[in-house]
Image (cartoon, rainbow, N blue to C red; front, top):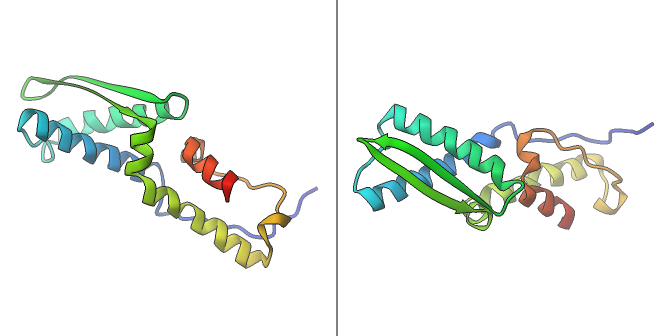
Length: 138
């Protein structure tokens, strides 16, 4: 038997926010490498977003992820990669934001973190190693 003392969350922070950071990063990289702006091309963005979602999941178990999209825009192939460290760096403010609901739940429960036995995480992004580490180190 367990007792729930408090719940908290941020419904405005989730996997899509991390995806958007990665998509924006690669839109800029494509612009630098090929002098072309894909930001207004829905099909190219959709294909890039799908690849970024896959890369994000890969980074939960690997230190690097590759993105390979044939003919992304105007016949140009886009091959690139991202490291977990770079992903964590570009999303650092979002990761820090994940601790705010934890602090709120502690305040609402009028408890200190030393009194907590278990924390239940909900959502796919809770598998991201950086989020797990931030909570462990909290």
